[in-house]
Length: 104
Image 1 (cartoon, rainbow, N blue to C red):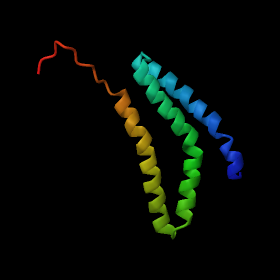
Image 2: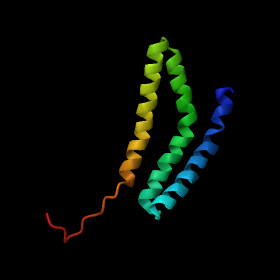
Image 3: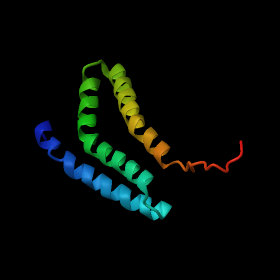
Image 4: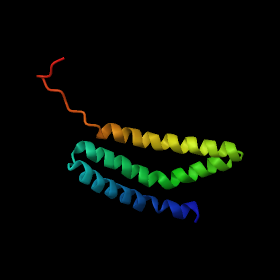
C-alpha cells in the first residue's frame, strides 16, 4: 500500500485509539475528569501518528546497513513512543492539590 493511501487511515486509527482509551480509562479508574481527558487526547494523537511513525522508522532503518539500521529504528521508535507515554503517565498520576491546611 502506498504511503499516500496509508495516511488516509491516520484519522480513523486515531479516533479508534481515542475512543478505546476513553473507555478503558473510564472502566479502570471509574472517573473521567480533566486529567483523564488529557491522557486520552495523548493516546489519540499517538494513534493517529503511528502510521507515519512506522513509515519514518522504516525509511531510517533502510538508509543504514542491516544491524545499524535495526538499532536506529528501535531507538527512534522507542524515543518517540516514550515522548507520548511518559507525559500520559504523568498526567494520570494521582497528585492531589495541597490545601492551605497542609502541614510541612
